[in-house]
View (cartoon, rainbow, N blue to C red):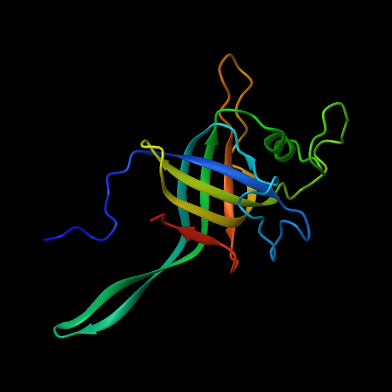
Length: 177
């Protein structure tokens, strides 16, 4: 029996690039081209985990021998959990509720925003150990801090971020030939 189409062993890591939300350049109706300078690498991504938010319900159905209960499950939202090995200005902007991106040397009022979220286009390249991409995914997202910020202690911090997918006709998944 043959394998399913496009089957392969996968030993891979993720490269993530972000194009922060800028009206008219990087927004719901405009995705930057691949070579655009708007794409910035999310430094040293150590883990990328796709997740879905689901709701389910039990449904009674008639069978040949009586009644049975079947479970229906619906995916209502998609997201990614990302762990990085470096703390970025974006992470600290979200962590401290700053109203705008951080500019070094310029003080800002912390804890000013209640909705600690930044919109951005996310480009994920699932890079195989061979150096080739298994897939490339572009999607519009809302980025938030996942859980509590890491402690300031005698070890390297590993910030956790959540990327919630925003439905868009410009979102794209590509499995290179």
